[in-house]
Image (tube, rainbow, N blue to C red; front, side, top):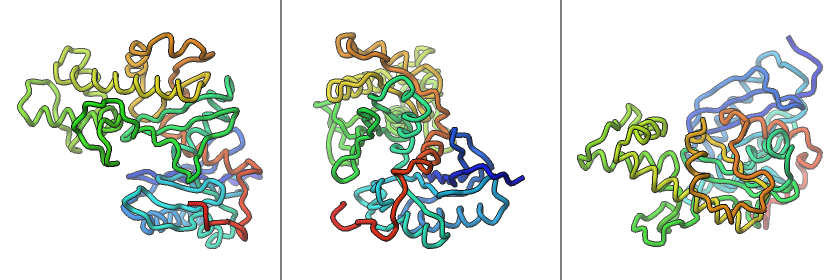
Amino acid sequence: MTTNIPTVLAVDQGGTKIVVAEVDRQGNLHQQMKFASDVSTQALATKQITHAIEDYLSHPHYGEIQQISVSTVGRINVNSGYWYEIDPGRCEPIDLAGAITEQFGIPAIAANDVYSATYAENKVGIGRQTSNFIYLNLGTGIAGRIVEHNHILTGAHFDAGEVGHMSVDIHSTDKCVCGRYGCVEPIASGLGISTRARALIEKGAETELRVETNGRVGAEQLFKAYDNGDQVAIQVMDEALIALAVLIENLIRTSDPDAVVIGGGTSNGNWLIYRICARITPETTRLMKVGIVKSQINPNNISIVGAGLRGFEKEASVDVNSRGIAGNQ
């Protein structure tokens, strides 16, 4: 049943699925629809986003849609909605927000998924306790954002927050996809711990761990095996936990926050956060008013909630006739 409640049509695109829903001013989701996603190219990803929006709009709406707000992967100008690249190796610049506005006649904005998640934390999560925090997303990869006085740091080229490529092991001989050695992402991300565990399994190490049907060794499996005393799981996870603790301590020393909020799919439950905190030196956190905490927002919804809430902010609205694309890369 359609209502007269103002909503934002929020779109969250991940590696395997697109979620579309209307979001109200309180951050509640209404009428979620899911679609397949492929982010191998920006052109294909954009086509799938517009198809998902078109499909949703062909059905009765929950409320009165004021704006469309997209959350997706890659480097995006949060002011103009211009999508520069999915990653440095796949660069096909496109005016994502402009294309959506033109096609549907509804004002549109766009932002990176971790930026959107951080926005949600600032509005309906940890931001209710402090205006200075770090949001750290632990999932297939690792990324984050620094928030100072309610302002999310984006950087000169909208590439701030790629903390998964901070080096935490100067002796590492494993080369990261970014070209550096010792990055935290291949050591401690969901994909990183899976890759390291699988390599040991394939070398014949004695372990209860098994490669799952998707080709991965899941985080929950590693957590359980660690608690059971499995030596492969202990080796992989001890290195990951130390790497994450070093990353967090470096970020705290860099930005002087009141809180570090840990979110993302790998952070489900308290297994990780308890063991990370045990490896943090008290001197590093002595000035923090809140400390290191787990996000209380559902990691499956946080980016789409943030995208929706952005649509209600006046400063998020974009004049589609003056996007200022040139010079913003």
